[in-house]
Image (cartoon, one colour):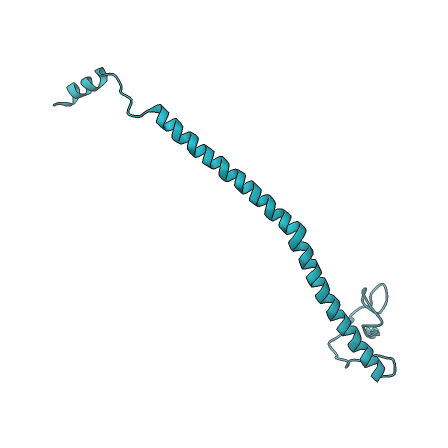
Length: 130
């Protein structure tokens, strides 16, 4: 059969549907219902874990780390008190290393750093800038 008669035969015959619209709409409705159920479950699960994080995990972490830091600071304070008791009420001076507290020019607020603590840091004298 040649191309032209075959083409004419195809064009003259009415178009035939090859699928049923109801079967597709039932499957589509089923799929959409499944997607809505999944979305609803995801929203509930997300809300649960958000509440679990905010009201359980974060306060627990704050309590655990707060307790740890408190214990470390108590040990540090006890150690410093022990050192002060051994040295007549004063902390022993750490060794003077030449690379610590170098000052090439004076600070506007004085010889020490901005966060100077006389109980924890050594007072540094400005070097002469000759």
